Amino acid sequence: MRFHPVLLATAALALLSCRPDKDSYVVVHSDVNCDVPRVFQLRVTITNNGVADQKILPETASAELGFPSSIVLALPGSRTGSVDLIVEALDDNRRIVGRGTASGTLAPGGRIDLYVQLTAITITTGLGTGIQLGQGVDGGVVQDSAASVKLDVSPTMGAPFAQVAAGAHSTCATRVDTSLWCWGSNTYGQLRLSGTSNRLIPSLVSATSWATVACGQTDACGIRTDGTLSCWGNNGSGQLGVATAAAEPRTEVPGGPWQGIAPGSYQSCGIWGDGTLWCWGDNTNGQLGTGNTVATSVPTQVVGTGWSQVSTSYYHTCATKLDGTVWCWGLNANLELADASVGLRMVPGQVGGSDWTQVVTGLYHTCATKQDKSLWCWGGNTAGQLGNSSAPILAQGSQGGISIPLQVAGAWNSISAGMAHTCGILSDLSLWCWGDNSSGQLGDGSEISSSAPVAVVVSGQAWTSVAAGSAHTCALATDGTLWCWGDNSDGQLGTGSGGLQLIPTRVVQ
Image (cartoon, rainbow, N blue to C red; front, side):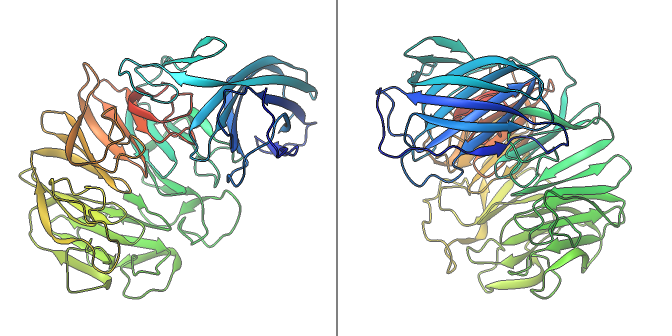
């Protein structure tokens, strides 16, 4: 065994929300084999009575950890029953380099000591490449120096999924029975679940009455079947639509009935049933479209009527109208507003043409479809996210982008934009992605970025919708199954495991 020079201090962490009952504790004692590379973080996943919770220690890697180490995990509420533990060792790039498991039985209000030996892991897949945990359809096989372990991520029976939304490190979805489910990072309460621990598989938020859900960077919003709007998660800039600084707030947004919602990084916009558009939250770059840069924590109307769909990102916002026009506003640092003559626009400005149907906003780029199903993209092209095979433009800011919409070949049913990648579904129901692929978010089995669309293939599947997050992607198949790939550092793929997934992996259903 190898001992590192820095000893990890004992830490007390609450994985679940506090309750008045006597707490139960799981004490994890871990050691690492000498074949494991340098370890900077531990990812601890504990499952008790079917509920999986996860913590990364420390949250920010700053130095190599020392071993052996002891970690105290507090489970408030006098927990009892079987406990299954997975401890993963992460390097300074948050790649999994070691893994160990343990299990036991916890008495009510008691303490259990679990001893975990971390061994180096290598991943075997049908692709013959070094893909991280859980690669493959319906789960994968992890091989380490001790044994082969089948990951317990086989989908269980449940209602088919109806719609999916991807945030920065979280994902939410509705099912055909109108129930709402979320998973991934919960640091800001963006899963609408108790506490701030991550969830590795879909967790039930509410059993009925959800029509649609949308995820922002660290928050999310959902519209119920009666048209009411609720938002939850980070409210540091008033992006939930109310003036409160409460931790993990869940708010009811006034107005409506609402027909569309788009949370961004630190602001949100939504459309009422009468076609009026309302925005709130951070307004540093004029992204609320209210004619100034004054932030507001309550919905404020954007000029105009007849709005039909809206999309908002970190710096800018775009929306379509029923008359087929597209309008954009906010910061134009990378020409994402399709106008080379302005740097900041505080009110909606029209993009050329009057036959647009859908618009989506990435961090530095914008894409939109027309009535003839043609797809056009403009703005920043640092990783080829415009999809027209043009050479990436590496500079950000100072007008480093393309202001004239460029066509992406094909007839497209729908599109979605992530931070620096874009995905879309063609009229033949095939799925394609392009742009940044540093986390495998293109789903083609590689980590090579592409300035042209690459096919995302799952045998026998056709696709109805796709949602691109910061560095992960999820797509809904015609049979109601949900598939995700890319960055999985916080469990946002919903597969029950951690690590990059370079091809679509089925979400636990």
